[in-house]
Image 1: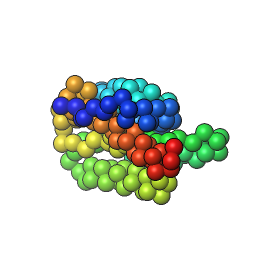
Image 2 (image 1 turned 60 degrees about the vertical axis):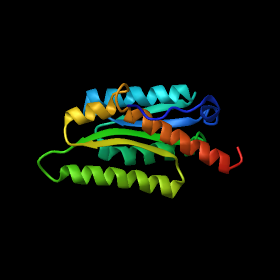
Image 3 (image 1 turned 120 degrees about the horizontal axis):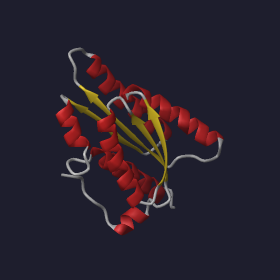
Image 4 (image 1 turned 90 degrees about the horizontal axis):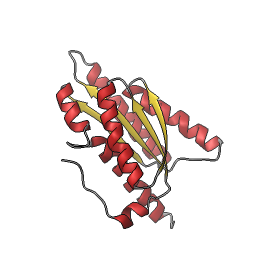
Length: 162
């Protein structure tokens, strides 16, 4: 079942937000499903979205940092970020490294830069779990990540008096 939907007033508080969406394309079908949910949620909030694709989940945090710095230099900062990816357990400890380090990198960016980030990097045992979590009509984790980022954008705007 998809995450909770928000009312028009709450969505409007994030209207016009400039959102960076960074997606890992290691598993194309799963990435497409996560992207569908995220873009649907961002469109419903009338957010402006720039999308960047990277090979895998470990590349998401550095791609975000690079894009944030470029946006700041160009005086077009992002209001928030949505990170989408998938890490499927294998036979080695690589799963643990990628899962932990991608999450750690996102959290470090969010805290250091007071940046609203929705973490949509799903970590699963197998492809069936990944597809179930990614599909809009099932768990819609891409949409959940976008809604989380938008919730933090709204919070930041409210606390800043905007």
